[in-house]
Image (cartoon, rainbow, N blue to C red):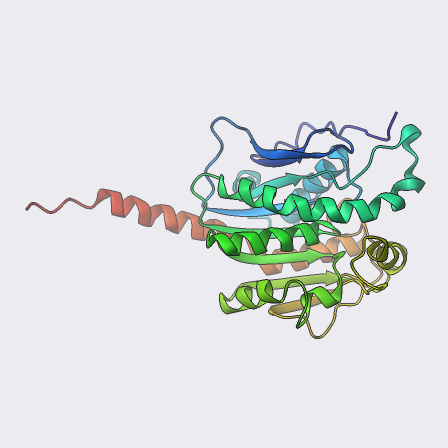
Amino acid sequence: MGRYKAYNNPAYKPSLKLYLRTQVEGGPLRNPGKLIPEKNTPSKRICVVLVHGYNNHVGQASKAYYSFRAKQKSIQKSLTEDNLEKLLGDTFWPGDAKWIWGADLLDFFFYSKAVDVAKKAGPLLADLILKIPGLLEVNFIGHSLGCRLILETITLLQNRGYPAIGKICLMAAAVENEMVSRGGKFESTLLKLQSNKSKIKILFSSSDIWVLGGAFPIGQKLAGEGNFPTALGLKPTPDMLGLVEKNRIPGAGHSDYWGIKKNKQNKLSAQFVEEFFNFGDIKRRIDQLQIEEKRVVAQPRAII
């Protein structure tokens, strides 16, 4: 048996899942991925795509996404469950392994392979985003190695030329500082985001010493991607390209971002996210788009 435990919360009813898994725990990437629901997939003019990080099975990712919703609604009282849900899309990808007897201590040894999974998942997630009906703009919120997946996905979407890339929030990013600096892997991606006025929010903590401070540099070395590099989510480089805002979460451990825990770090993280995105404002923008679309449809045709 693995360690999988379902998250049986009837209140967690995501309107859209971007599903890249073949199993609820571990397993290979689903290729191609699928949108859930497959039939009558909801139209989203603007979508905020949530991307969990390394070592999360389906139950853990579901709990993180529900906790995120709960925290946001508690901060912005005018934000109803329905209004927020219409904006979100929950990504599920196999950045974890299934060990016999749930041997979590072995998870570290899967990290280097998970990096490769994140890179291969980029094209699949980009394809799913392109299939969201009516999509004009996509935004991202990611955690840990999910931030790497986001950057890989954005690079591919930019090559396609659509949809527009809005805001990106990277929490405890398991991404090398060198990759987001001049000459790095994502230099072109970040410069394009900057030219399009897309803003990036970095939430980081120098207290994340076990995962980003210890395991990350070793894991990246084993993955052949760096010589014991520093993580963006631990100590972000001042040389990062793009329109970047950085906020430190004092005392935050690696799991203190989505809102699962009832501590000041989770609350502060949620506040920074809400201030950055202002979900109520996104809802008003969508409403305005729908009004303008109705006006265009209602315009009488000219008689020739």
